[in-house]
Amino acid sequence: MYQVRTDLALEAREKFEEDNVEIKGVRLDEEQATPDILISSVVIETENGAKAMGKPKGSYVTLEAPNMIEEDEGYHREISIQLSRVLKRLLPKKKEFTTLVAGLGNRAVTPDSLGPRVVDNLCITRHIIKEFGRYVIGDSCHKSVSSIVPGVMAQTGIESMEIVRGIVKETSPDVIIAVDALAARSTRRLNRTIQITDTGINPGSGVGNHRHALNSENVGIPVIAIGIPTVVDAATIVIDTMNNLLEAMSQAEQIRRIENSYEKLDMMEKYELVRELLTPQLNTLYVTTKDVDEAVRRLSFTVSEGINIALQEEDTGCHQE
Image (cartoon, rainbow, N blue to C red; front, side):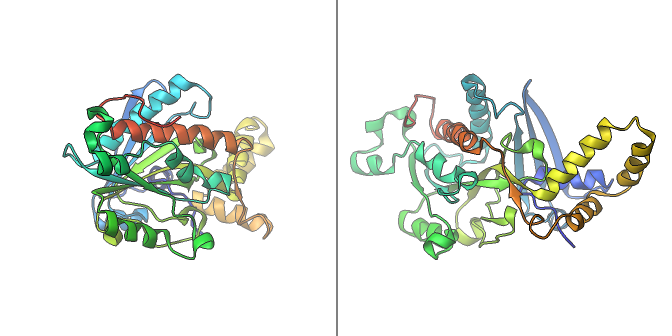
C-alpha cells in the first residue's frame, strides 16, 4: 500500500485523528507561545506507539508559524527565540559542551539546500577555542561549535552518517545538531513549520530516498534534528485542491453528492485514488513553491540564529553576517 510521505510526526499523528483511531503510547501537548506561533510536542513513549507512528521513540516538537514565509525581521527573530528555547531543553545540561552541526542536503538543489545554508551563518568557534582558549571570544559566546556539510551520496559516494561518524571519532563532540529539508503531507505547512526532535534523522526519507539514519545508535552521541518542510508530493496538492473545491462548491446539489462520496474515504483511500488518476510521470513528482530560493535563504537565517542563540549564554550577535 502507498504510504503518505511526511517527515513531520505531527502530521503522522493527525492521520490517526482523521481516521478516529487512538494511539496508545503517544502523547500530544500544545503551547501557544505567541499569538502567531504554536508549539506542539508529540512524545512517542512506547514501542507500540513507535510502530504505529512509523517513527522512533522520542520527542518531536513542531513550531508552526503561518507567517514564516513573510519577510518580517521582527517576526523571524521571535521564531528564532522560540526555536532556541526548544533547543535548550534538548541540549546537554552542563555549562560547557561541544557541538557539531551537520548541514545535510544538496547545496546545488535549492529546496534541499537548507542544511548547508544554515551552516553558512553559524557562529563557528571550535578552532578559535582550541588555539586561544574560550575566553578570547567572550564568556557569552564560549561554547565550542564546529560544522560539516557532508553533501549527498551522489556527490561523495559516502553516506552522510559515515562522514559524520568519522568526524565524531576524531573531534569528540558532546552533541550533534543535524539540519535538513523535509517533506510535508500538507501544503499549508510548506516553509511555515519547524520540527525539532531528539531522535535524529533519516536523510532523504521524506522523498523515499532512504539512507542510514543519523542517530545516537549509529554515531554514539545524542543527535538533535531540525527540519523545515520545503516540498510536498503531487498527490498532496491534488487532494488539497479537491478539498478546497468541494468546500467552495458545497452549495450545489450535484457537487454535494460528490462531496458526500468523497468524504466517506479515509486519507489513505484518497491518496490511492488520486495516485491512480495521476499519470505515471506525475505520481512521483515533488513540488515546491516558486519563491523557494528566497524562502530557503530567509529560513536558513532564522534557523541559524536560533541555533546561535541556544549555544550562547546570551544574545551578543556572534553570528556571521
